[in-house]
Amino acid sequence: MHLSPVAAYKEATREHCALHNYWQLRLRLQRNAFEPSFIDVPVVNEYFETKMRNYLGALGPALLTVLNPDKFPMFLRTNFYTRAVLRH
Image 1 (cartoon, rainbow, N blue to C red):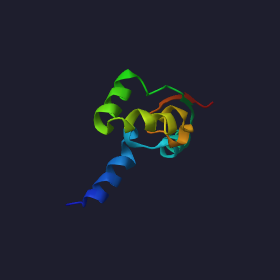
Image 2 (cartoon, rainbow, N blue to C red):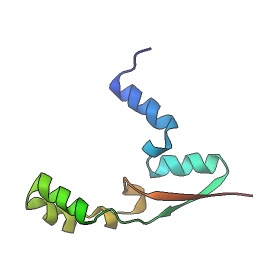
Image 3 (cartoon, helix red, strand yellow):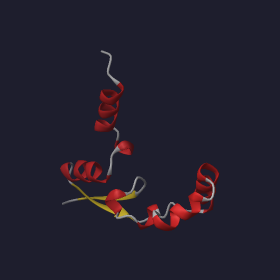
């Protein structure tokens, strides 16, 4: 069966926890008797800043002062760590 790119992406994210967003991962863990907590781990470091500068020039560092992903609410982040504790 051949899937369109959008359908293939949806199928991959349905079962692959690394491709879940905050809400999808939270729901999957809760459905399976786990209580998740999301851990604040900064992603903006020297490498990230250099990458922004290389891709966007002088605009990169300026954007980071306004749109720093480390300042986003957890549910808007694309990278996070999760701790899941089995509920009794």
